[in-house]
Length: 158
Image (cartoon, rainbow, N blue to C red; front, side, top):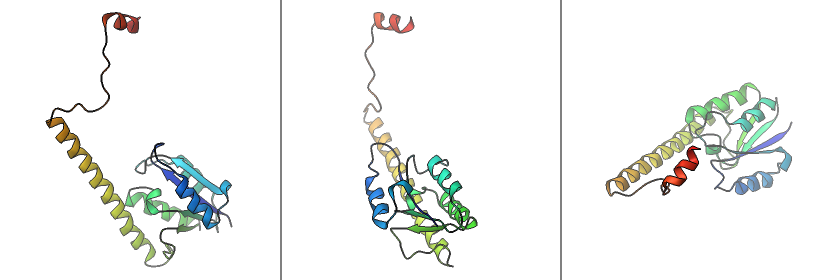
């Protein structure tokens, strides 16, 4: 039986070390902690997929929080199903008493996952409204346009 940890951040501007520290404190050796930088909604998480592929019966996957595995309820439950089929245990450090193999584990995890998905959707909606409000005020969004001149344009075309 081998215990593996998985830590994920959405982009390089974030810090993954707090998740790694939690996994180490749980007792997982550094070489068994897989770290990945990919957005939670991405259906493909190459490092996680490779880890799940190599895990076998009796192994355990430990994650600091459920939203590190994905922001979609379907994504999370599909992963839990795959782990169960492989007889791989699953542990959330944020909810140590949760056992997904028991009758209440999956439904409770689905509820938490649904709230994470809802939170993400609310953030996207707030961002969209903020962008619309800024545009109505005439604010330029995105990168500033570079000033160009004829000589620079000819150089670029050459």
